[in-house]
Image (cartoon, helix red, strand yellow):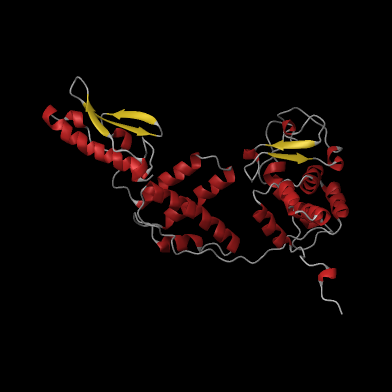
Amino acid sequence: MSKATVKYPKIKSDNKQRFYVVFYSNEKRYRIYNGSKINSNLYPNTYPVNERYEIAKLLCAEVYKHLLSGLPLDSKVKVNMTNKDYLKIALEEKLKQNHTNKYKEQLFFIYKKLIYCIQDSNIEPQHIYQTLNEYTSESSYNTYKNRLNVLINKAITLGMDSNPMKDIKAKRCKAKLHKPYRDISAILDEVKDYNHNLYICCIMTYGCLLRPHREIRELTWSDFNSDLTQINLSGNRNKSGRNRIVPIPKYVSVLLTKGEPHHNIFTNTTTPPNKDYFKTLWGRFKRVSKLLEQDQTLYSFRHTGAVEIFKRTGSITKLQKAMGHSSINVSLTYLRGLEIAELKEEDMPMV
């Protein structure tokens, strides 16, 4: 918050000769008699009457500084905090926000690993490197670098005066091909013979383009409309964070029998399968499958559906909507990962 948008507080007194500071924050008027709300140890009215005004002037200056910092009243930030203190509060603030459980788990996990590396109160670049260099996978390295960056940036907004991640770069990841299925019917039949729930998951991943491990696993019958022709997912139930309406193909809807509204579609109870349920089933299926090829995964059903849509429509906008991507840029990146050829045979030079 800039000085131009924050007015300097005023000092007033009541009929008992008690001084207080008056100011506005977020269009709300505040009147405070001491520094408890800004974590200040100034209490003007504990002083003799003839000294209270001078102490109130000091309190007024601290209130102004607090307002400029952008911190909320009753902030946990206190005087003489260490980098570790700031980081802890940054984590607590982030865990209160509306993020997915997985995201919060990752924040907490990498926070603990970083704290373990710090011997004193300061956070230095070598502590970040030591934490991240445990990951040989470029993807994991970059994921946890991003999580640490979120915590460090939050700590800086709270008052931490250094950025130990300033010169730490992300690792360049090699493009990973999610290999589509050549014969989608054959692989689905093989899954069907292996496990019914896994089959429902796979065919919905392909036909509805939902993500298997959360969006499909957590589905309840209340997410479906009455005739099972569409699924309605709220923003907190999908990765993009936006409300999403998903059409259901007939070859999927004929497999479904609607149950109690708040029952999970796989367990028929109010509790969904555990978060590793489909990961475990898929791992077991891989060991017995005769059709799976290298680099084909549970997500390959979604990738195969994406390729099919793009080949039939040629529309990146339709693909974006079908996949539930937050932007077209995400869809473009997705297609590059799938290595869909941008040139057709007729585009090539002719003799």
